[in-house]
Image 1 (cartoon, helix red, strand yellow):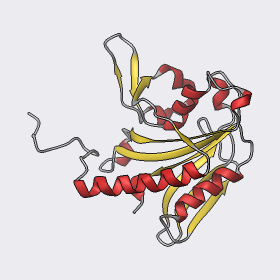
Image 2: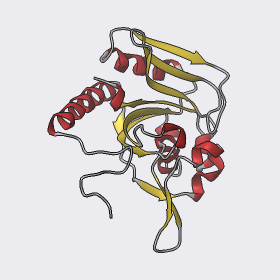
Image 3: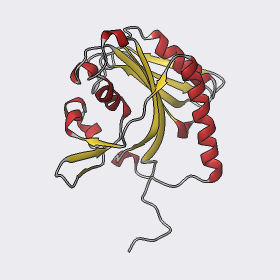
Image 4: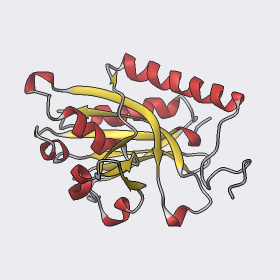
Amino acid sequence: MVNKFRYPTGVRPLSIEETARRRRIESRFADILERAGFCEIVLPIIDYAEPYAPLQARNTSRQSYRFIDREGELVAIRSDFTPMVARALAPSITAADLPLKVYYRGDVIRCDPSRLGTNREMFQIGAEIVGDASDDEAIAVATEIASAFVAKPLVVRDDLDEAGYYTGTRFYIYDSASRTKIAQGGRYDDLYATFGTPAPAIGFTFTIDNLD
């Protein structure tokens, strides 16, 4: 019998104070992103697993909670926003829409044996620029956001880091005082073609639990 006072490992409710803190952080993100011309999109918490299978490294697919729904389809709970953004946008965007700047927020749920005892449920806010072959604007906006939360953000670039759906530039933002990683991003120029519309793209994600 499940203890009625216990939650599954890695998930928990937020207190009133913690919820208020999260909403304040969200507002600061939204203000910066919307001033920079980004528009918000909302994505589903579950989706069919099959469209994403060719994009995922083996270890990434093992992070997803999956189940068979009542129609017999294999469904996955959201563990990564970026492919879901491409799947949502690519079928309908045209050259006239580009560059397209969007942002998103919500929970991702990951089952990673190497993270036992850490959060399985993480609240993330991220942004993408679709149709921009330059890295400069995305990194500049990510750095501006980081500067709203830490005194001296440090951006580390790796121009040869290709893994999963990433095709080149990866970047990571750290709090230079604590050396804590607070954001990461990269370029995925082939991802949108997979879902119907070729377009270069770059984006970044912050995990809100890492910020004050």
